[in-house]
Length: 372
Image (cartoon, rainbow, N blue to C red; front, side, top):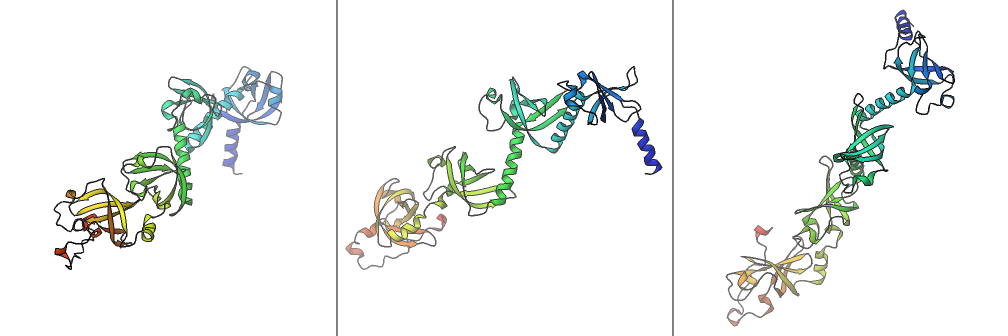
C-alpha cells in the first residue's frame, strides 16, 4: 500500500457519515433494546429496536459478526454515537434496486393489491407501485378488479424516491416478452416450416396469424385455391389454423404464410380427371369482351373464348352467357405449366353445313395477355 492509499484509507475509515448515507457495518453487540454496529467511523453506531426492521426482533435477526447495511439517521447523538436504521437502509436499498431494474429494463413480477380509479396498486420488490390502466396488457379486455390478487409481469417505467413514486407497466413487459419470443421464433423458423397459430386480425387483403411470438400474414391469394372475395368467407377471428411458412424477412420481422399450400393442388386432380376432349360442367364467374371465365372445379377456372361460344358470330359475351349461369363445355386445351385451361361451348355440336370442312382453328383458346 502506498502512502497515498494509506491516507485515503484513513480518511474513509474515520470520516464522519452524513444524514441519509447508507454505509456498511459489522454487528458488535446485540442488547435487548439496541444493537451496536462498527461502521468504521470515529464513533460506533447504534440501532434502536424500533429501527431494526419490520419485526423489530433483535435476537432472531442479528448476531455479532453479521455484515449489514445501515442508514444514517443522525451523525452524532448526545453520547457521541451515530444513530442508525436497519429498516430505512433496507427500504432505501430497495429503491436503489428498483432504479437498477428500471435502467436494465428487467421484467419482474408484481402482486396486484387493489384497484383505484386510475389503475392498480401493486407490490413490487416490497415497494408500493402504480400500474396505470393505460399500461395494462394490450389484449386484456376484462375488469381491472379481476386482476386484484394476481401476480403479473411488469417493467418499471419511473422511479422517483423523493416523491415515493414508482410507475410500472404490464404492457411494456408484454412487449419485452414478445420481442424475445419473436427472436426465438425467427431463429428456428425456415421456409417450408408448418406451424399452428391463431387468427389475430383480419383485413381486406388477408389474415394475420399469431404463431407464438410474431404475427404472420396469409395474403388473400394464399387462403385457398378457389377465388376468395372476402377473407371472412374462409377464416374467422380467433380461429386456430395450421399454416405453411412461405417467406421470411427477419430484418422487417415479416412472415408470409399460406393456407392453400397445405391443400391438394386442384391441377393435380384436373390432369387426371379432365383430359382434353372431356365434357365438363362450369359456372360463369365473370365475363369479358374476349370471352367468359368458368369455374369447372374448386380452385380452377377455364377461359371460354368468345370465338368458342357459338358457330355463329358473337358480338358480346353477355349476349350468350351471364355471370352465375351453369353450362356444359368441352375441354379443348390444357397448359399445366402456365396453369391454364381452354374451353368451348360450340364444339359440343357439329358445325353447320356452311362451315363443314372449313378451317376453324384460329388459336382463340389462348389467354389474352392482359389477364396474365
